[in-house]
Image 1 (cartoon, rainbow, N blue to C red):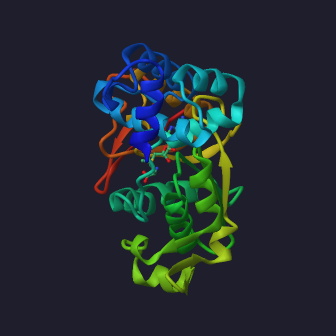
Image 2: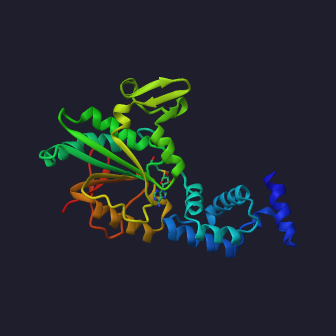
Image 3: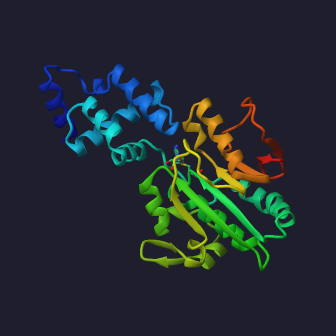
Length: 287
Ligand SMILES: C[S@@+](CC[C@H](N)C(=O)[O-])C[C@H]1O[C@@H](n2cnc3c(N)ncnc32)[C@H](O)[C@@H]1O
């Protein structure tokens, strides 16, 4: 179907170009720049085919036959821009992804915060680029488990993908997606339903899902911990640095930053201090 639709459209323009030429160099540059300016997400020659296939899909759904017409549309229509950005994101995630970070959270970060936040007895965490919610719910279950009585916490979970945020808000995960959750947590914090598990309200109500584009200031301030894992890899260095600077503004003095284990702030000349523990590495805002 898809092939015949585009073959017809392309033929209609008097050309008989193969499908791989759907996104020519000039259009690739145009979309690459627009998407980068809007979100920081960077497309290179190696992932050009992903952009191409997402654009094909959007044009087919909108019944638009030219990339330039569709570009005019996303410039005028913020909702369509959001839909396109959503479609080019990669949302791979899972519960307790990179367990070492949660060990470090429990054994190195939480004990520090218990001393530092003695007056407020509340810990505020941001899961930036939370995808479908597995990361913020992992954080919430862990904090529920380890904080002493009388302490509270709040997890803000944000993403540029509205589809992902809807899944997160609902908090229902198919059986195939719950691997990695310790049995005791499953019993305590999730209810078995046909085909999957539902996050219990006691956890769901500690996580606030919000649309946020990391290209902009979140307005959040005084955060104790920021998780932004496996998001910066999609940005180029300039966008990474700008995002990290915004985290600095959002974070409280003596707070903690976790990035993905394949990501690094090395050579970026940021104010964060690199911390190596027995469990994992992370960054600290020391002032
Ligand atoms: C690979 S997932 C990582 C999810 C989770 N942090 C983890 O490590 O499992 C990357 C997420 O970053 C989000 N993302 C990409 N660019 C973004 C931006 N500019 N603002 C907010 N979220 C963004 C994507 O929508 C996607 O859900």
